[in-house]
Length: 95
Image (cartoon, rainbow, N blue to C red; front, side, top):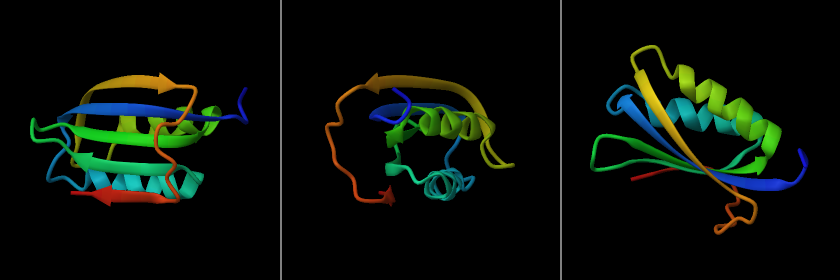
């Protein structure tokens, strides 16, 4: 099912705010042709909702695990869906 559109919600913990993480994620998602959004959560984590082919989503997760140079990614939580709740047209940074 690699070509089927899936959605994954990713919660990233560690030093991921104020280090360029959202724009790092934006560039990576756009390079892979993934739709969705990234935003900071009030609890110091980053939330990513990404839609695309499963193989590309796994590739994005690998990139996110590394993060930008100033980040320290300590944990990733993923929640996969077969059907997408949101139909995003592009990938955006949200407040």
